[in-house]
Length: 161
Image 1 (cartoon, rainbow, N blue to C red):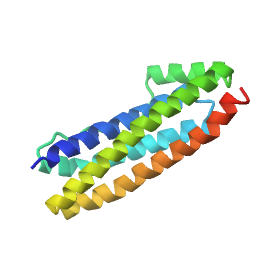
Image 2: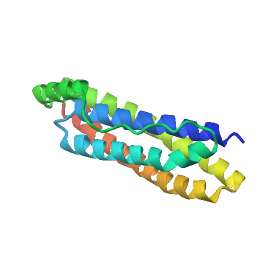
Image 3: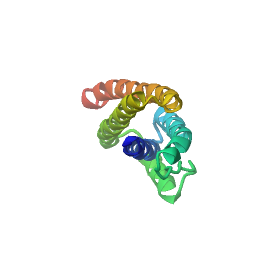
């Protein structure tokens, strides 16, 4: 079965989203909602990886390790620079660019969940389908939040900046 490849794709995509959520949150630490919710959503991605791990092993895929969530030196430096820059015109454009890139990464992960769900249905793997259904729902909510955040940010940066 090729479900293992679909699982590996989801693992890679979720790990990428978690990483990007942390990076963007740290880079724009003055945007408190983005910082805190970004880290919360990154931990949710890590939880998805943990839930998927037993199924990955069952299909012969090495489970992706979840991030530890602790800020490293680079993240601390990003946060300090964000606090120094504050909410300038340049930081607003950077925020908008980062949100757009993060949204695309999140959408790629959501689509990977769709593909895995279809494969799990075809294979009649009910246990995997339960995990995929719950995690996919969270991935959709993550995309909705990011799209809303972009809609809020764009007019502030482009028209008021």
